[in-house]
Amino acid sequence: MLQISNLTKSFGTLQVLNGIDLHIKKGEVVSIIGPSGTGKSTLLRCINYLEQPTSGTITIDGISISPETQSRKRLYEIRRKSSMIFQDHSLFENKTVLENITLPLISAYGYLKADAETKAMNILRTIGLADKYDQYPYALSGGQQQRAGIGRAIAIEPKVMLFDEPTSALDPSLINEVLELILSLAEKHMTMLIVTHEMGFASHVSDRIIFMDHGVILEDGTPDQIFTNPQCKETEDFIKSTIHRINY
Ligand SMILES: Nc1ncnc2c1ncn2[C@@H]1O[C@H](COP(=O)(O)OP(=O)(O)O)[C@@H](O)[C@H]1O
Ligand SMILES: [Mg+2]
Image 1 (spheres, rainbow, N blue to C red):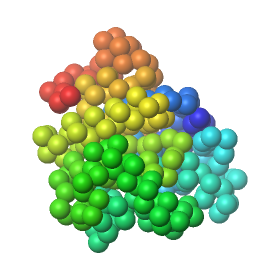
Image 2: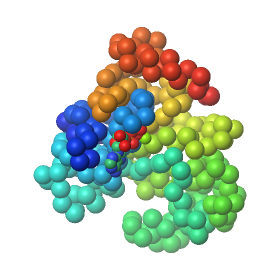
Image 3: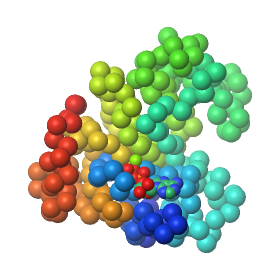
Image 4: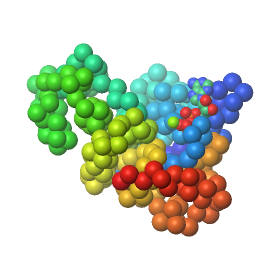
């Protein structure tokens, strides 16, 4: 489903990703953990081509792109394959919850307004926000805003969902409702790559955990392998340093 081959990314003289190889199967849930400044966000941004890699190939659902083969058409195709969720919800503040979900469908995916609204209401029901359809983002709690953002992201039916610390900006009391929603997507076999500091959640939801450090993947294993039997000292030290952060 998602194949990353020998991906590198530099900002000027700073090499941030240093030869990343990663394969994620359809329906797999993979979490990325690692110290801050290690390149986790940059990796997600490169997968979505929000950031152009310096070298290497990204393939999602049969569409491959690399700096050499990049074209406008290819960019358009690859960006449609994934949906990204950031730390802060990226809802349009001057649009209702319903419009936030329907507008991309209408403007970029050719939906008729009525069809987009039917689809959006179905999604709002599954994410427990149907009663908020006519509210503006400011009237929602942080957790509801983030759930609405996830609703908008799934509406376009991406092949892969990319989450970049989706609960880091939330009050602790609002974290679980967002994690529960991500878990429900996992149960529906959505392919997902999740950067998170929620170790308990990562362990629970993931088929695999990746530990990244200084722009490389140091370890890739099952939650059990990574959390109870890490092979690298760096992984072990990192997990120990986050032990106080288990909320889930
Ligand atoms: N647009 C950018 N320009 C220059 N440096 C950047 C840019 N984005 C990220 N970096 C640098 O790349 C490194 C990795 O950042 P990031 O991918 O955000 O790490 P993480 O998500 O693991 O905390 C950091 O040193 C950061 O300062
Ligand atoms: Mg980051």
